[in-house]
Image 1 (cartoon, one colour):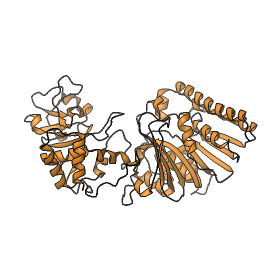
Image 2 (image 1 turned 180 degrees about the vertical axis):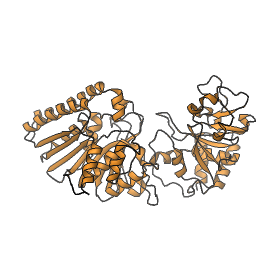
Image 3 (image 1 turned 90 degrees about the horizontal axis):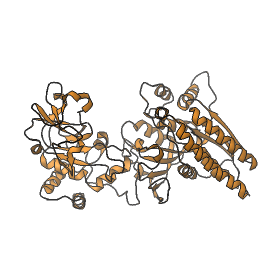
Image 4 (image 1 turned 60 degrees about the vertical axis):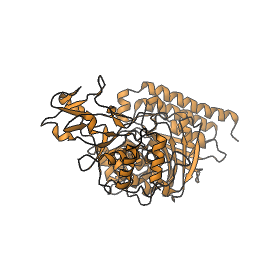
Length: 512
């Protein structure tokens, strides 16, 4: 049996590691954190992640922690498996290139080595201060050449990878492509590379942005992930800003557990408001609820409650092209046409619509003494970005960090914009149009009501973790028929006040 004093010492070890994490965070330069995409893991999240690993089937655990930081995740992993009756032998490989982090990482691992020795527990470790993506891509690529290098494999991987976009022309993308990985962010590159380094039935647990779950940019990564591994566990934080609150991260994050080469069965999905896990709820879903069989884009849908996976109505199965509509992002980027923008309408100006002009689903223009301008000069330079005045359904691209709704739709109404021939739509709005022409009033209103329904908002949240709503996401959504949207619009025109309850009842009515 492990003595109570040793257990107390390992618990103290986790606290010691967490104190080092907080101290290291104060030493890191803001510019360095941004450059390396560093966001550190709290002890509560680290312990929860370690708890998601199944009981090992082998006595020797070969653990990979890429981007190890001060060792928070490794510490939690060691804390879990070093206190078992069946003592495992753990061989750790930790990657960390930041000198500040490296200093604390060495201190933490040296302390645990001492604890392991007192427990008669086999623990060995090495820290690699090289770029994980470049180093491992190069070694894996060598297996296809005459000059093969040894490539160490692993049974387990735990990670909080860096979050940073990588350009198509960068060294990272070049090296990744050599081993068959095409992706746009370091976090997904870390996950993909680690999967290649895992042994068959190896297990990986990572905390990563939810952004990979949908959209065209992450399609190659989703296909790669789902072809290499079985998704076993997903955890969703209901609050966007709680997982990395010390670093003020607004990106919505999930924890995912996958088994390389595993048989895909049901997926366990859990939710909690924040990293205290005090209101943890756990559900089980069949995989075809998470990734639809017919979905060629492999969107990953994540429910936020036990009743959140009712099938979307069959009547709402039309694409935008089916109903003859288009979706675009507002073409006016204000800082690029700064000299052509006016605070208030003047001669030769046309209305410029920002998200602030959309209030309670309708247009409020102009706004005097507002934070945003109200007009743009109509001339030879700006005309290519302007659209005919008319009815358009618009959706805000960004929602505030804790806003109840993700999709917030409104209508641009021509009568409220005077006799303007053209209008400008700013880049923070997505808008629906009919081949660059306005919609009919009924179609525009019907589309707005549909998008503002709770049913649509909940459906959208299943696969989108962005703090923004992309035009590509709206394009890939399903809609009622054009006929039903027009009916919905005509109904809305006869209602004096559209409450959420009234909207939801009518949308549910046309879905049957």
